[in-house]
Structures are given as C-alpha cells and as structure tokens.
Amino acid sequence: MSQPHGAQSLRHWLIGLALSLALAWAAGAVFLDTVQPVAFDPQIGRYVAMPGTTSRTRGEGWASSNVGEHGIRGLPGGKLPAGPKVVFWGDSFVEGVQVDDADRMAQVFTSLSHTAGLNLTGVGIGHGGDTLIDNIFKASDYASALGSVALNVYFLGRISDVLPDSPRPCRAAFYSTPEPHLRRNDCPPSDLALRFAPALRSLEGASAFAAYLKLQALRLRLASGPGGTKQAPDAKAEAQDLAPLWDFLIAEVRRASPGPVLFLYAPNVPALTTGCVRTVDPDAATAEAFAAACQRNGVVFLNLGTIFMTTFESTGRFQSGFFNSPPGTGHLNEDGHRLVAQAVLQYIKENRDALLAP
Image (cartoon, rainbow, N blue to C red; front, top):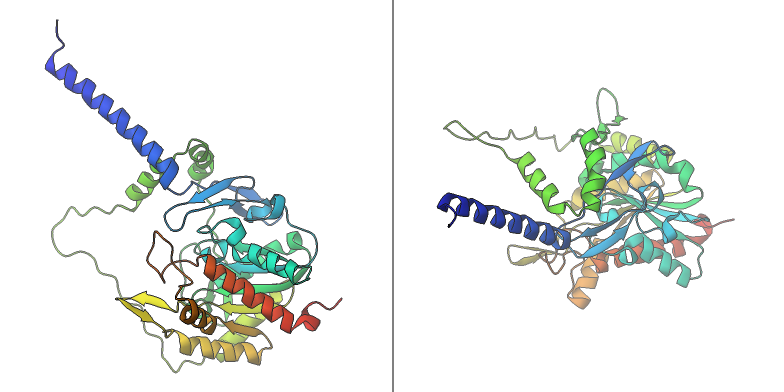
C-alpha cells in the first residue's frame, strides 16, 4: 500500500532540508571565515584570541593564521621571542588575517631585519576595529609580556583616529573637554560567546554563525511611513586649535609605550573610485598638521603615501585589494604589508645608533 501523499511530501521536505543544511555546512567550512574563540589572559588583563587556535579568512583574501600566546598572531612556535622587538600596534590592518602569517608586516619585517643583520623581531598586535586610543591602553597592558621593545610602530590606517570627541561603542576614546583625557571602554564578550564559540569553531559552524549575525543585524519595520534617518554629527569648527590636544595625545602615547615611538600613516592611495585612480589623500591636510605636532614633540611621523604611489607608478599594482575584492580597496594585501615592513626597516637603518644603542 502506497504512503499518503502528505507523508511523502513531508519525507521529501525533510530530506531536502537535511541536504540543504549539509551543503550549507560544507560550503561554510570552505568558503566562510572561521569562528574565532577568545579567552581571558590574566597577565595582560584582556580577552584575546584563544592561543593555540587557527583561523582562516575567505571573505577578503584567502589566508590562514595561527594564534600564539597573548592572542598574538604569527609568532614563531606560538611564543614571544626573546631579544629586542619592533611592535606594530593597530587595528585589522596590523592583524592582517587577509594574508598568511608569513606575509604579514611583522613577520616580513623579521625576515628583512635578519637578512640585514639586525637582531630584531617584528610582533604585530592588532585587532579589527581598534583605534589608536585602544592601542595606547593595550601598550600598557602588554608591557610586562613584551620585554625589550626597540620601537613601537603605531599604524594609522585612518588619520581620524587622532581627532578628539569621536567615541564609538566598546572602543576607547579621546575627549577634549572638560580637559583633554582618554577613557577606556572595553566590552567583555558575552557568556554565550565564550561558551559556544569554541564548539562552533571545532564543528566548523561558520555558516550557522553567519546566519546568526544576519538575524542579529535584521531590523524589521512593521509600520508604514518613512524610515528613520541618522542625524548628521555636529560639524567641528575648522579653526579649532588642535595643537594642545595633540600635544596631550602624543604625550600619552609616549607615556604608555615601552620604548621609542613611530607613527606610521598608510593613506588609501592609490585607490580605484568610480572607475578612476585616486592619487590624492582626502585627509592630507589633517595628516600634515598632525605630522607637525609630532615633530614639535620629538616623535617621528612617517607618511607612506609617496611610497604607495611610487610603487603603483612603477608596477601598476595596488597595495590594497585581493583577487576576490576590488583593487585599491579594503585591507593591505601582500604588497602593502611588504611596503610597510620595508619602510620601518629603512627608518631603523637610518636611525640605528639612536634606536639600537647597547
């Protein structure tokens, strides 16, 4: 006796659902970014990427990364090396999960340094979304773990990081009133994330995590009428005197840093916009003004815009963008990381006596 039509439909639906979920799982295990669990590090007093884990990145670039002690990626053997270090502080540009460990600025610097006969090791401490102010606090937290630091390189992928009064959720901020001050604003991970992220990682649950993030960001409108609009931020007076604020900020960076300081600005030039190659940094005026403040305070500010443009003109290659993303946009690719490492090494060679004096 044949099964009722409704039972057959239900069976076909369940089989289809199982196959769809299996396909989504397999696709996520290959084509989606790994879920990265975190753990609390008592020595530095922060939640960091869980040491001993690996991650892959597929959304931009195609790379794998190993997490070592204190959540630092790309460490040889997973351990901080002995001896003097050049520490790259920054956001996702320094974290560099879009390129493999060996192609990241810190590791490229190590290779170039040893080739040049310098006993220096690059260490990259970056996290997506962090600002310069976050890294000021991180420098203090990591000081005891890092040991000898020959140079602190503060990577600026956006010059707006040095401007005051632009707070963001779960990020440290720089305020101008009632007097210049920095405010820490860490947001610890939720109990749910701490509990389930390792399981999602081990079970290759990237597709389920991606679906969760989509649902979390979903905003439903059940009423008619126009949608909400964002209120434009108050415009800052162009005549505002930033000099004393920058003097304070630079002093805070020097106070927190376990060694000499270098600000490294990587403007997004050249960039491909609306079918044309943009060669002028729209934030050049702010960068020049901050560079003057650094000079006044005895700190070096290195703008990589000229290096990026010269390389593009001679090779036709952008320092940003990957085979699966538009050229000249997004994070630094292998060329960009190499150019950063070369620029830092060149600076150290030119100032070897001051930086590497016994």
